[in-house]
Length: 74
Image (cartoon, rainbow, N blue to C red; front, side, top):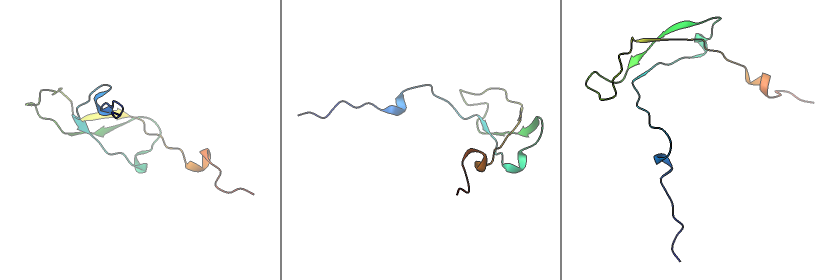
């Protein structure tokens, strides 16, 4: 009996290339939008290069786990 056919799950779906990244922490949670610096991962020689400007704008929100799950019961 031959094993069932399997396929590489990583071959499915869209492919992405990391061009830049940033790290946001709880200290970045604020009211309103803020500009955050990007660390560029790709160079102009990369075939996936985009002219990024070195920052992004977003609003980081956080919700305590106790809002979603009961912490104390009884």
